[in-house]
Length: 93
Image (cartoon, rainbow, N blue to C red; front, side, top):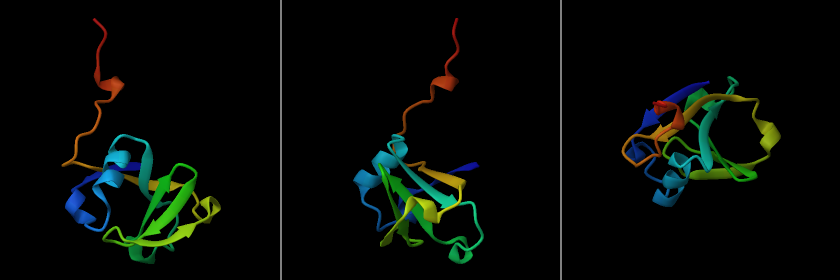
């Protein structure tokens, strides 16, 4: 699984509150680990117990069943929106 940083302007149709939930780790924006992802341009958004297919600009295409994807290949966060610091970045002294 690869972690990628993108600008929120890369997905202009995605609401800022969604972007914040993604960066807080409450929701997950990802591309699945299978090759039929329409050239790799589509995203999936896992929000709580629901999953949605998004277009390349972040517009909602449809709700999907969680069993429609087969693992996660790439996870995305937004570099221009605040994000909590990982506890793994701290050292104990």
